[in-house]
Length: 126
Picture (tube, rainbow, N blue to C red):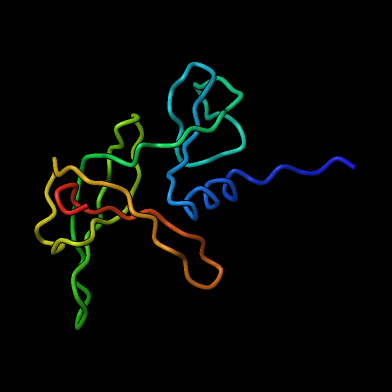
């Protein structure tokens, strides 16, 4: 019987469950993120998997202050491997997150049907 391979999302989440940030690489060695089945336009397939070292730099940031709740950061992280992802920086007050801050991955367990997801901490605190 021909067994179906797990979806790219399932493979990505399995990596996060192990504490690894997986990303894909196109046929020319360029990083591709968010996980997908086929190479995006302008890229050549097939896509293969790689594991990030987990280090990056805050490329852009803001914070959100919901009424009656603590503020939280929203940050675009430029990973050292050459791709970017939206996440948040924790272990630091949201208002103190700055562009250029070096950060390290921490995989956060998901809740209910949500899988694990990546968050970041300042490298000095990690």
